[in-house]
Length: 260
Image 1: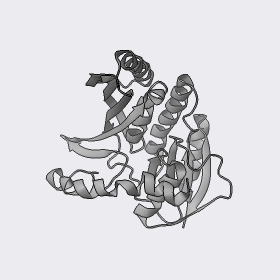
Image 2 (image 1 turned 30 degrees about the horizontal axis):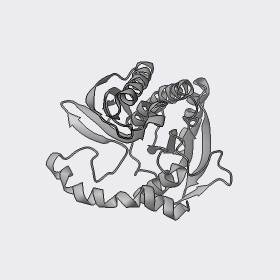
Image 3 (image 1 turned 180 degrees about the vertical axis):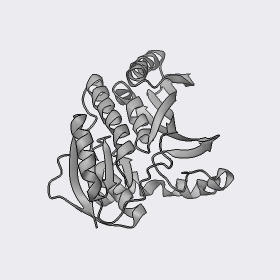
Image 4 (image 1 turned 135 degrees about the horizontal axis):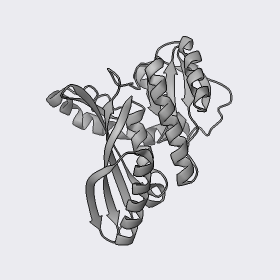
């Protein structure tokens, strides 16, 4: 798929939904709502701020590997710690049981309990949607619209690929490292690299910040494949601190460009 077609398919094709629901922000004045069109929604809840993201419907193939992990990164990359999740399952009893067992394994490994949801048993293509609730650890969420001129473009962590066990290990390393980074490093913007891969992710960061970027000649990963690691932008002076934390935690770092 060409770059323009990919952006149209994964990003611009949903503009009508944002326009349709945009007035909803006025009812609650969220910290980050439908108009932000970010990875998660952020709302005040008492003296805390809660991040919520829903993802899917996932195919059974992905559910059996890492669906809960993929749904979780939308909360984590905004600066949140997942608290619990809900699932929505559809398919035959056998398919639903398979997916539920896989999600249970992921939930226990990631310490993100699945506390409820909804299930429909019928002879349909097995699918699953997951909603993750998390607590914001920072004063404000890390948006995908706040890139600044001169920022370095960094891919943080290895792609979350492989078997279920491999994906869990990669994700846990990335998430644990990320929490240490956001405590000590000034991050301007961040987004997980999912639908449409780096092409879509870079487009959204650029479009929302009204800034362009210059990529290195060689990027170590496919530009259109879901990586599910994090694309972050930060001031050059902060890079040494980020690199030090990543080395301590054996977490990969890939500088891929600069914001113009």
